[in-house]
Length: 363
Length: 72
Image 1 (cartoon, rainbow over the protein chains, first blue to last red):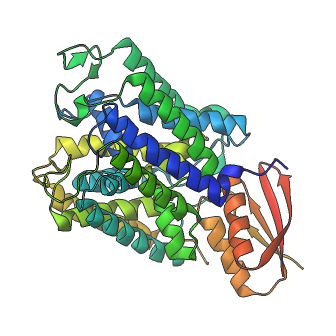
Image 2: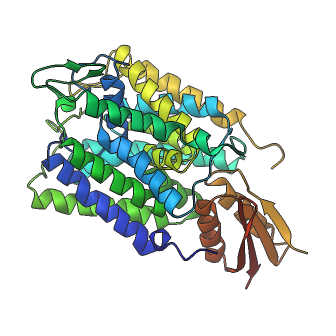
Image 3: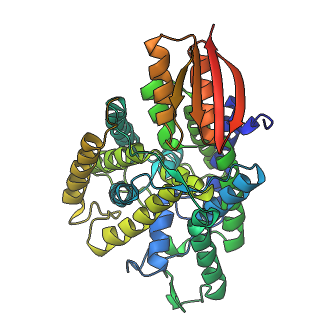
């Protein structure tokens, strides 16, 4: 038996949450967009833009943080002998859940990570998002209690678990071969933004190192923002929640120190004030994350430790970002997109269908 | 006779739900839980301890772990 994993203790998860809470506002200080030091959904959306899966000119950048999350988790998993290549638990369902998780997140304009970072930056709209997230996760727990289950995974080839890490490594190589050129919106196969959130980023190496570090720590601690809320609702357990709360508190304090705290609803960076759709967008995301068993960050960390189904969810999110921006589902600071509202409704119906129909035979 | 919960291949939170279900049945003093990831091992142990169970033994078995717990 291996030694005890200190990161999986109460203080371990609090330490990891605090670490992320300090690093995210620092990344913002170093160039990342407002209240978006780290946002898994937004950054995957930017990656989709960099690859040309959508052509929204303001959100195109190969975000090194995401690459670092997966590779940092892979390194930690190998170092601590936790790499377990596995796959085969209803991958197509996970893909669909990833697509709708992203669609919901882009109606709110952020994933759970950014929801707390927005709150820590004083953005009141985040409260609606976090309430929606909690509601969505609560609905997810009702299905879990009724026996919802996507089935067992199978052990697979080690190389099968490398697929997403290798894709991320490929993305990183592309970012080095085709760096952003002054005043150019394209270099080789990668698209870049000249204005908007996609044009705002910390230096590549800083983002990469922070991403690797967080990926490593999160793999060890099992940090999960969806699990934080789910475990309280389902089991009354506050273990993961303490990490999530530490993130909020330390991000708030760091924002105060860096003079990045600005309270209010209107005029917040990359945010809109349509409360119902902030709530509903995140409710859809929360439900999709709960049904898929992890927040978007956790899916990246799981993919890094060999979980091929989590990797499929990640690909679903990246494709979902393409769909969102190609077909006018994503919100902007002006409000929800022309097809955002029907997309959220369809997404919720699809998630309910999945939750109702996919149950363990004889509980 | 110990009850056995086979949670191998199932992802979070299924192993914990299955363990707690078995604990709720209250039939057996000893429960054996089979899991295949370290995360599940930690989560199941944490949940069982919160229900007043003691983790007696964790042994590597195949690709995963066999967790033996008893009430009291």
